[in-house]
Image (tube, rainbow, N blue to C red; front, side):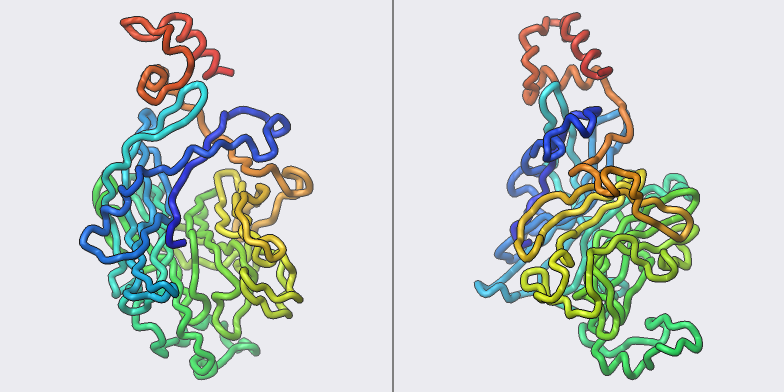
Length: 416
């Protein structure tokens, strides 16, 4: 965690799954940002380790090659035993770069300037001074189709306030009137549930370059219910706004239980009374879990628990309902690999796993199809003959640009 870097993979589009290598044909391209550039955000800050955590990337102009990366920049100041000397510093950050491709590979340039966008404010979103274990990460940005030109960001946060303050309310509990299983507020306070203060935060862009943002009140709060609502995203389908997030069995408050997995909420707009999907459970995809058996932890699971209860993490729902996630624990062994792709069918407030996809619902590893083709021939030629181009056709260039043979091969490559 404290040394994480953002990298990238690429592969040729249009190759049928049956013809791909077992790894899906993905090629690792290396680190996305030049070494040391993300550390510039922490100039003047004392730290022992610095990391790049997740976020999201947008193509700035569909006719160009500039990409804007929004990510979580972190600085840790730790003792040798991993305890904090000072709280971690988390900053939602933006950096711009350019994507390039030739016949053989993909590469990036730029990302030399990293602009800090948001730090928790202590009013809506908890700070490190309020809680050294606070969450503030995973920015996901999008333009709201109901408000063209307005860009929002959702992210994982914790509700502001000093850690351990016993301030749960009746509204936090969310019980319906006359629920026979409802706990009293005092029972919840006595359980220590006030240590769990997750929320899904919201910010709005104040300029067209998306380099200035303003906090808004959170979209969803899990006060006294759960402490982590990671990797939130907004997914819009058939006029409905879905918020998907991942959470963990071990981050629920006392008296509440649920498996590691993807949870979903649905509403009619960015400011809705979001309701949990699937008959109120909220669960969209869950790791196989015996809720009658204690969980343990991913690094020390309960031997009576399903060994796959912790296997899948960081699920991401893509256009068309395809879901990618990460296997980080399989039967007690820590490792790292993409999980098989699955597809979720979403309709109104319900979702199901599409068993017609792949083999009984399990698709190929990294089955991530391109959702559009928009080739800038002039830009492609420039990449071919630029410093990074390795097409093997460079010798065919003439003083005025590409030779007719090169252009013909480019057209064949693009249209195949």
